Amino acid sequence: MRKLEHIGIAVHDLEEAERIFGDLLGEPSYKREDVASESVLTSFFKAGDTKIELLVPTSPESAIARHLEKRGAGLHHLAFAVDDLDAEIERLTAKGYRVVTGPKAGADGKRIAFLHPSDTAKVLVELCEGA
Image (cartoon, rainbow, N blue to C red; front, side, top):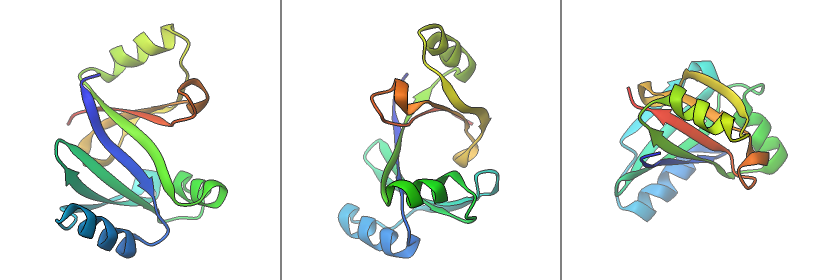
């Protein structure tokens, strides 16, 4: 893993969350992206070399909608940049980590996979391979 790529935050109200993070970071969101395959609308902010990704569901059946219903708004996942997603999955599954979903297409043209939070100290971990 090369670096922390982004922090994913589930929100109920994207406009309000964009206002808050714009105030906190001193810059507006630089990009919104509708990720139809995940039924989610994302908004990205830069914080140094790391990004903040706000996520709001576009369907009541999406994973983010289920997360919000079950756990409420807040931290959803930590994403780490990897050079070779398949090799990283192979390395981690050999150590006993389980892949919840992926590899698949994600936001920003990346290939992504998620590790089961029960295996990662109760934190959902996303692996991101650059576009």
